Length: 270
Image 1 (spheres, rainbow, N blue to C red):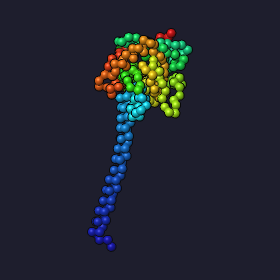
Image 2: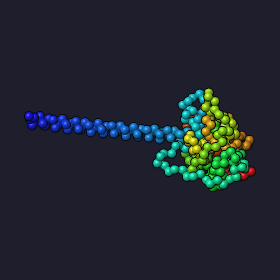
Image 3: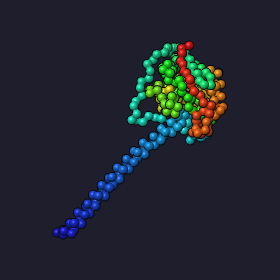
């Protein structure tokens, strides 16, 4: 027969085991919760890095993989799951068989960009839609890179590299860039090229674009939609020559020292 003392000890032992089990269960739940939080934080930090490199430029000179990964023309950070879905792109309102000219009147002079709607209809249509709404008027070109990749990035009314029109447009004309080799997964965007920035994900372009003032190697994932005229290329080269202002991401990546403001943007059929 079990004595009362033995019974008391048995009950105490069972209570202790139940407490230990509850503690272990709580510990495992906490570990799972912390893992989820850590993963979410990693995504946020990665998105932040994308914003810092926004509109950024992957490629550098091909000798520094870490620098290359942090520099990729990005429209903005990847949207958080809780953010609203992008609106539909503007209704097609251009002649898909025509050529168009985007004119950028800046504080430093005019830049004329030739665009072919047959090759990039959604992109040309979007730029005309935004220009007609004066979306670009009074905006600054917020980013310049001067090492390995040589571009001036514009098109963000916020001036942070994270702004956009609230919708995305599909990638276009990527085949015109050619195919990368096995030795180098990049292709050349020639000096004078004008291409869309994006988040690094397919079909994520918005309003930001970059102007290449020297031959620049990048992955073939940024819609090539235009070519600057000689005067425009000369203007952007002069901006690149002045370099990056203090306080940028690095001495070769940040706001241009020679500031560029788009005073007025137009898109007209030729």
